[in-house]
Image (cartoon, rainbow, N blue to C red; front, side):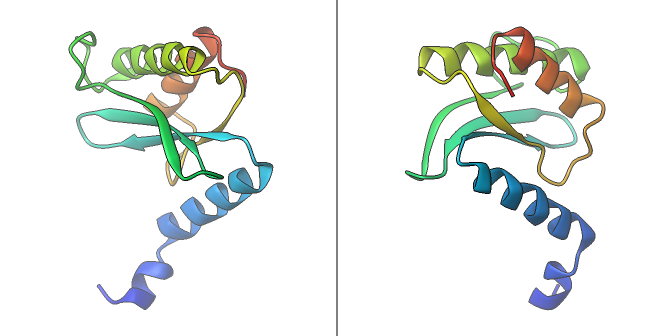
Length: 117
C-alpha cells in the first residue's frame, strides 16, 4: 500500500482527527486499541511522551477475554492503575473505532472505576 493510499484511508483520517482534538486539550490520554480477540488500553502523557499505565484483556486477572465483559474489566483495571499513578481526569481516545460495543464497555468500566472524562 502506498503512503498516499494509507493517508487517504478513512480509518486513518478519523484516527488523526480524533487524536488531534484530544492532544489539543492537553490532558492525559486514555488510548484504546481493539484487535479481533483482545482489547488494550494505555494512559499516555503526550507532553512528556511517556506511558503512565497500561492494561489488556491478556492479563491474568481477566478471564473474559476480549468480549464486552472483558473490556469492562480492562476499563476498571486501567482506572485502578490510573488512580494509583495520581491521574483522575483523562481524555478518551477511541482512535479509529466507533464509540460502540467493546470500546464503549471499556469507557464505562473506566468511569465506574473512578476516572473522569
